[in-house]
Image (cartoon, rainbow over all chains, first blue to last red; front, side, top):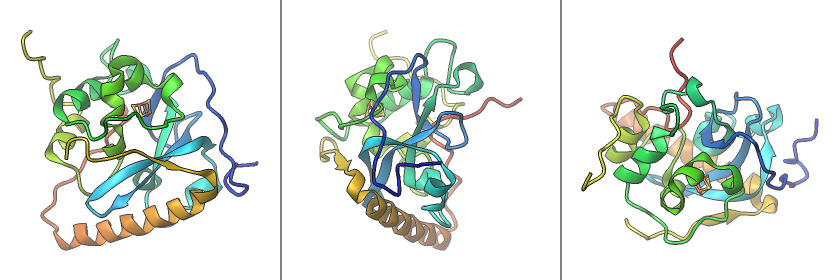
Length: 161
Length: 52
Ligand code: SF4
């Protein structure tokens, strides 16, 4: 099977009927990599790929001893009620990350997932302005990130409501 | 930390290098993490399957 990795090609964005989760697991059906976590130790930042790279054994092998979710951001169709963050209509993880974490970027990342991204559809620009610091798995989470990541953390009530 | 970052684009030509750099950063962080064993478990930030 061609991965598009060896020949340096990523697939262009295509529109999906089901919104895509922008922090998925590579084991999910239809998963692909759209970001690589770069930056510096303790200051990791996602670099957004020019294309979507399908998950294959070859891709996963590239991370060697490191868990692929430490290295890549994967997209995959949203699992809906199969995910602890979904409340029946919204992704509470997206709500919490926007409410709990400060924005890190003024400009929107050139992100291949955007046409289908659940976080973007739900929270708009505010999600994208925080997205570069989201690592699916890592060793160094800020307190706010850890709170947002935990499905048991209640969704904060917006100020003034 | 607010607004300090201009998002990066990773070209497909630079894909393998970006992955290799990311892997070594992760290994470095893993070592630091093991050295400071007081760190607590960090939950996955993303798809979190519902318990059956
Ligand atoms: S939140 Fe924005 S930048 Fe992040 S994956 Fe979704 S569309 Fe891309």
